[in-house]
Image 1: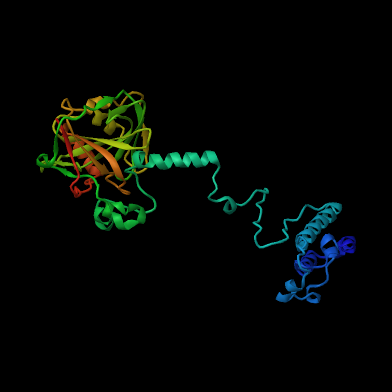
Image 2: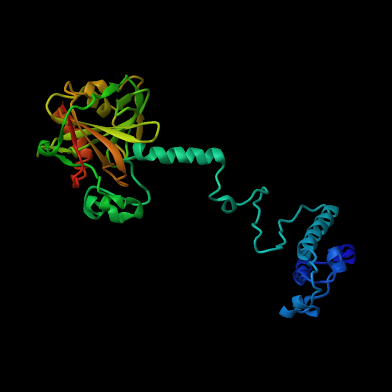
Length: 375
């Protein structure tokens, strides 16, 4: 190797690399003196054919094999250093050449960092926690947002009848036994007392977006719903036309789904039904800032949204366990459907229906599940 470095200026880089390629990793029972001196030039590969499989058997009994030193790595390193020293002496910049010393080595990027492929799937702890939070909150905050993995709609080949076949994650849409919405009939409900809903809604700020499937309002602030011994925070609400729920064979013009989540990640949806009549003050505020293009988002003024304006005086409700009404149709959602409908004007209804003529999932089988009717 020493004479190689002395004559480096008369050598070409391809020649050096070709020479380095002839070196072989020595067998386990190679001469110890050669292994101890990795700087010593090894004989050509053809002069040292691979040892037969029986060679290990001829080793002294009880002897441990000496450690294997990767001569190719050591020689390749000296070649790189010699090239750099030679170029530095000639005033040249370091050439962008890498000497491969193993198939498992990943190429470095221009700035010396590992390539993206080498760290894919290994997010930093903070990033991983953030992703976990997004995942757990996706079901409530983005329950009705478009899914890039598979397009779904309310009609045609990607309509509700096909949701379960669009991708494996949507399988519950087809096979679930606790799906929503459902047709609620008083004759089959569980009559009796039920705890009153404890609602604390305050004037809040937020933003309104057209997510391609509905108009959705994402809220900020401490708006809560307490029921069954748990407090749920209101995260967003959105609209369906016509209403997805049916009560005693009656349909409704629209429904607002108020989506809440508690500290354990469980969901509770308060459904407020609407029929044509007087204009809704809350809906008027949302429609005033309604984005017209899919994906567009409009910030709302502070304190604009007060959901107390859309709650009926009669707060009796139906309670049952169901699912999200859009893919992935996740089950285990607590549904609270208010019995008394509110009103919106025909003009307000017409504006929404121009954008979404039908964004309601058909009612699903109840499969004998219990529906409590709060008296």
